[in-house]
Image 1 (cartoon, rainbow, N blue to C red):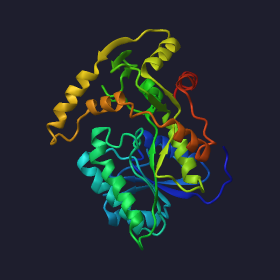
Image 2: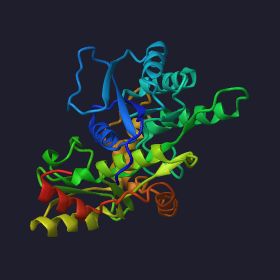
Image 3: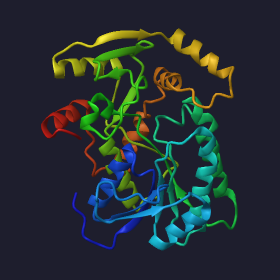
Image 4: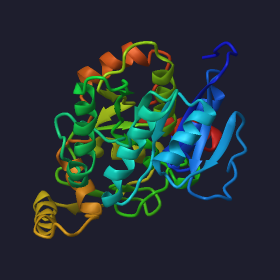
Amino acid sequence: MQYPQIERQVIALAGGTGDLGRYIHEELVKDGRFAVALLTRKASAANPTCLPHTTIHPTDYTETSLVSILNTTGATALISLIRCPNSDYIPLHKTFITACLSSDTCKRFIPSEWAGDIEKFPDIPISYGSTRAPIRKYLRELEQKPGRPRLQWTLFNHGWFMDYFLPPSQSYMKYIQGEFPIDVGSWTYTVRGTGEEPQSWTAGRDVARAVCELLGSEQEWEEVTYVCGEWGTFNHTAEVLERFYGRPFTRKTRSLEEINSDLRKYESQPEIEDVGVVEVEQHQVAGATACPKEKTLRQREKYFSNVKFMSVEEMLTVAEREGRV
């Protein structure tokens, strides 16, 4: 959709050079309503993609540094796309929140969630219970404090990135060995649990387009926002891929009992910060990656009617035709 050329709102992106960050960055500057203030820890960093309507701001992510950048750029929103060690998540995001509240213009915030159904499964993956959940509570408590400037915020979630069904060369999403059960590089499918647990997938670029629409919406944000391109199961989608590419997967199995056994090992060792693949497995077999359909479709009508969300087959077709999504 084309928008009239107006003075662009500046959106500050923390972690904007990463996988989803690159999609959001591209879609924001493509949209006539927005410009980007790209936050980076590296003083020598340059715009990696030479995108227009972008300024680069080295920062140590202290409150002083962030407030200065937000005020200098006149940023109206801050989006966190940062994947950091669990021990860093809470202090970093509290600093983001304080910086927004202390700034002159930045009164909207999207913390780094980017998961599935966090209302039904607030503590899955495991690390979310000790990192995201306290920040959610902190944001809610801020709203109850009298006399505090108001911060509009939402927890944005999309299920899996369906980009992981593509070779890495066709998407910005980097494949992390072992996390996603379908590996198109080795053409293997690890059936976790039954493979029939509910899932949802959304293309990274569609997530980015939806973020743009939400930022441009005049409607009040809800506490949790969901988007989804397609609901299904891994068994069904593996069959879709096999038909599309004309070849069968080599299948492996990973039983629910095996996954739960590994989870118990981590639960008995709370000092382990990163539980790795097993928490992703738990997320999948619990069905926690599936965004709640009724709420997601209602919000699609409310906020995202201008976004045409791709199905898995549509994404595969686009990638085959254009080389990437």
